[in-house]
Image 1 (spheres, rainbow, N blue to C red):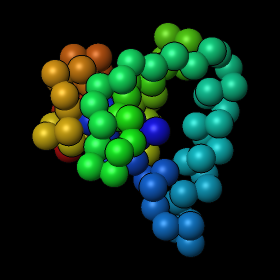
Image 2: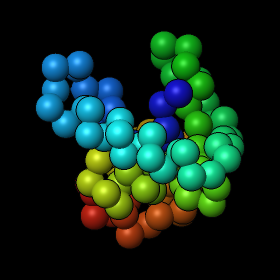
Image 3: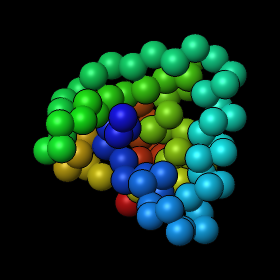
Image 4: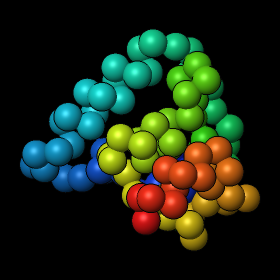
Length: 93
């Protein structure tokens, strides 16, 4: 499920050297707390795009804060990510 408003390196080709580390860091955070999500839209491939939380941690914000994603304003439906983590969104562009 793509996370709202970010371009994440988790979607890099399997040969990418950064992809495994990012997956491991996401796995570590999601193991700490229950996962919840808010569906935002459906992308052109038919996937649900969502705001996802591990407990109270917004995963889009977490990836932005850790340099693992780039904020994409045009993908930020209703500016949910910009409002949730304005500093991280602005510094990652």
